[in-house]
Image (tube, rainbow, N blue to C red; front, side, top):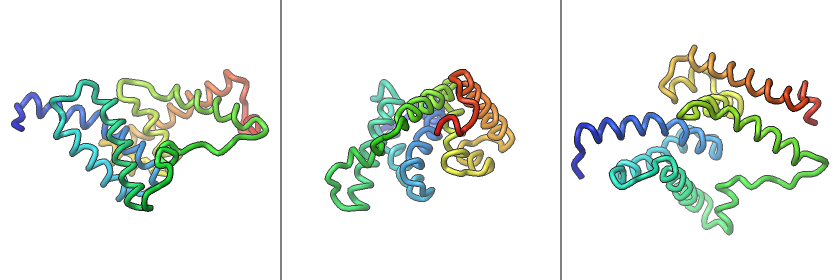
Length: 175
């Protein structure tokens, strides 16, 4: 398939916009940078091949990501009885009110998805959840280290502000 200059620029813009989201989603499941990069490469190769036919990039990438992750799990662990459970990271049953805590935390985390690209959430996930350094996150996101640090700290303040609005003043209040 021949690409015009405009199509190449459009693809590059879409790649820049969605790669951090796909990377973060995959890394949160695998906790392995090499495997994550392999999965992302496969997803974006498929994206490149179908780019001109895709109407909704984000939805298409999510669906393809799920398929590629499912293939990855089947290859790595043999044929899983329920690959959906592995892909979705099915939650463990909740007891003693932990379910309500999880819902509250999820609502707070959802508020981090600001801006068109949702990168504040990605930055928070990379640094707080996956233990990336600011430098590592910056490298993967194509940003400056100080920019990542600033946006992470801003996200933490928004997250804590939301929890305070809900009456949570400390982590002990969640437990």
